[in-house]
Length: 242
Image (cartoon, rainbow, N blue to C red; front, side, top):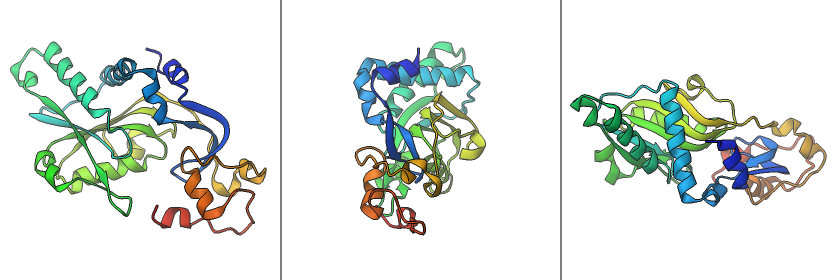
């Protein structure tokens, strides 16, 4: 399956504009995850399963736990974990010879975000999640902050372990080491030029920031449109609540 072609067909890649990413970096391209549904539900499920296949081909190692959770961060892949869980459970049942492997069940899970923009697990889900190993499944990975945060949550709050992390698209060049996970399997890697705000050529040229996609709306609410004065303090973007 050509994941790059499907992204193009779904108009998920937007270019030729000025975007602000979650990390605060700027660039002229953006992957609009809201467009994923435009490729159709059948194609979307096929893509998710393709990501699972590719992870297996690259050597994904699964624990012999009775249950394994596929956890999707709250503002990310909340619709993806169920399809990936179904894929792995079907694959294990079809390829395993022993009852030990056939008894493994996969379940979808998710985090929520509090008023301080921190991920947490709701109280009602804690008994279900505690002690279970997890695969983190994200949609778009940039600087990897969300995966690292959810990984820390799994280890500290749930007293569990992270088996691996997967994603639809990696556009930040992340690795298992940079994400602090044992294994990492991006479905697709896309190289996107990103600039620190202090040396963004788009800002220097005064090109307006897109306020409909990414974090542009928040950026412009705080600092207005470029160009900016030399000593502008951009720290509120990271330190003030959304």
